Image (cartoon, one colour):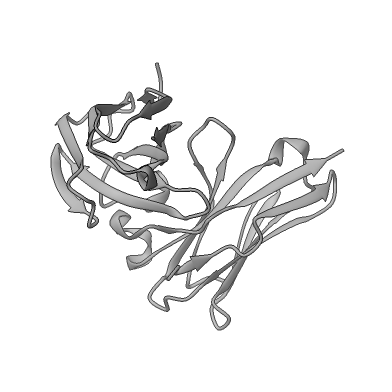
Length: 115
Length: 115
């Protein structure tokens, strides 16, 4: 049973618009959440994270929102750019993100940003 | 070479073959990881090495045998694999195993096909 779920395998957005990628989790012990970005033929790279003590974290065009009661987080990219086209993985960990052994990933959402 | 490199990038092997995957990190890190990503499944942690010592074996079958001769190199020896072992195998490294999870840097992966 997957503890981290990304129910949308793909998303297509026009350049300049907002991209919203969603992630749900089931384990209430998770207290640190991350988004990774993966281009073809490359490994995932860290994008942004959020601790459970916050409900929002912003870094430039990227904002992650956390709704603990709904066990849901989302990644907003605005404005979307063609270079954002990639697979985005949601991940969660326990122990406030300090226990690297407990990193649990979702299946990923492929984002395509078209002109 | 910089970052985390993996060889080979693609591998096709029969069920009776023995092969090895290699990972090398040029970041001065002291923790290394093997992950497996099967089609339409989440990224799964397989093994963790801290300072060349294995600290995590995530219930991986014995047909996968890791080796970490030093903190810069990590191998995954494969023997008598099954077709369901076909997947993308990702290596990662981090400065401190106790550090925040986003400090893991991933290699590009080896795509393995078992016939």
